[in-house]
Image (cartoon, rainbow over all chains, first blue to last red; front, side, top):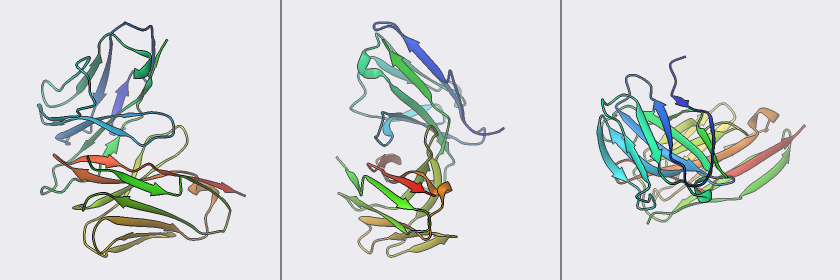
Length: 116
Length: 110
C-alpha cells in the first residue's frame, strides 16, 4: 500500500503528558499537511510543509504544538503538556506540487488522541 | 479569516431520492475541492473545480462552481446506501492550505 500512513492509530494519555505522532506521506509528494478534526466538524488546518520547510502554521496552534519534517519525507507532530481539549483526530495529508494550484490532498487514516 | 459554510448540516433520504449540498465561501476561491468522509474514515478527494461556472459530472454526482467563484454545489442523483457519509467542500487559502466547510452529513435509508 503506497498511501499516507500514520502511527499510532490511537493514543490515550493522561493530561500533562507529551505525545508524538508520525506521518509517512506518499513518497513522491513534497507537500505535507497536518489537520485536527473533532466530532461533527471538518478538518481544521494546523500546519503545512513543502519539503522540509514549514511554510505555514495556524494561529490556533499553541506553543505546545510543534511539527517537524527533517528530511522532507516523514513528519512528526508533538504535543507537549497535553490538555483534555487536545482530544481529537489528528489527520495528515500529502499532495504533489501542481503549478501553484492547491491540488488533491491524500489523507492518512489519522491518529485518534484521547486525553484523560 | 476565510469561512466556508455548508447547508444543510444533515440530510436523511430514502434510497433513490436526490440529494444536494451547498457550499458558500466568505471570500473568492481560486478553486474548490470536494471530499467525502465515510463514518469512521478519513476524507477522500472527489473532485476539484477551477473555472468560474464549471460543471463536472462523476456518474451520479454533479459538481458546480459558481460564477463568482464563492459558492459550489454537489448534487447526487438517485442516492444509494453507498453514498452515506459526510461531504465537505474545501477552498485553498494562503500557502494552499485548505479551509474545509462545515460538512453535510448524508444518511440513506434502503
